[in-house]
Image (cartoon, rainbow, N blue to C red; front, side, top):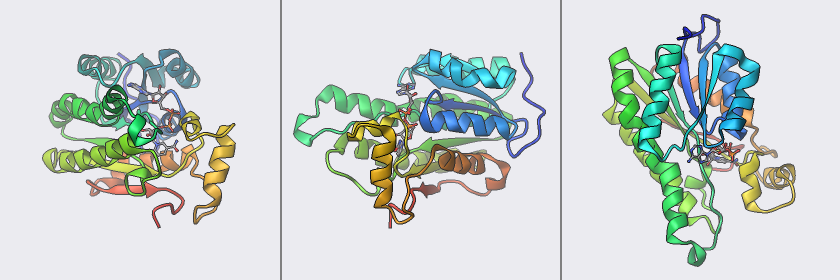
Length: 254
Ligand SMILES: NC(=O)c1ccc[n+]([C@@H]2O[C@H](COP(=O)([O-])OP(=O)(O)OC[C@H]3O[C@@H](n4cnc5c(N)ncnc54)[C@H](O)[C@@H]3O)[C@@H](O)[C@H]2O)c1
């Protein structure tokens, strides 16, 4: 077992699991969490990319190939994190999938998969993580939802339903898991990551720039903007904060 890091920082000594950590917002959050003193397990369907994200961080990060819709795999993930780092303080439920498709063309399989990854994964994780964090005396569950949950766009029925659903579940968990465990939600606006290509366009930056131009702050949200919110909500600075939904959306909700 590698002991949790003794490095300083706003997450000093904490151990985190970040799902969807191999790409985009998750990968940016891995780097920030490590920089703030945490040890991190990068959990993703794509184990190879998870390993690439971990590589610069030496023994402070560990990659794990996991499908977050598989309850047994999530249990094994939490066991592996505790075996390697000795504890678990933060579970960032960040993995997600986007489905942009006209309502009448969405298949039942696509609907079920979107809800499984974006909603059911949090239910499965909470059942595994809650006893562990309670036994330790505390912990933080963090969810990446989306500003789409408040501002639907055309052809996003499954995605919007999933992101509003996971927000409702997170707020319920904030009540059910208090006082030991805090549960909070981040609603990103458009962020230039591979997911954004689902909205069409030739390049991630072109889509982000087109979307950013119409936002009040005149720019897209960067992965690091979301990571900053994740650091705050996962840190002891937010020890009185639970059940909140924090928009990091360049004003999209206005
Ligand atoms: N990019 C945006 O504009 C935006 C806006 C609002 C919300 N979000 C949300 O932010 C989160 C991160 O998205 P991103 O933009 O970084 O996307 P991304 O596609 O870059 O990364 C998502 C990661 O999740 C992983 N993943 C997908 N299904 C998984 C599963 N079943 N098990 C484990 N890992 C799985 C993928 O392999 C990928 O590495 C998602 O929940 C997304 O819905 C993104």
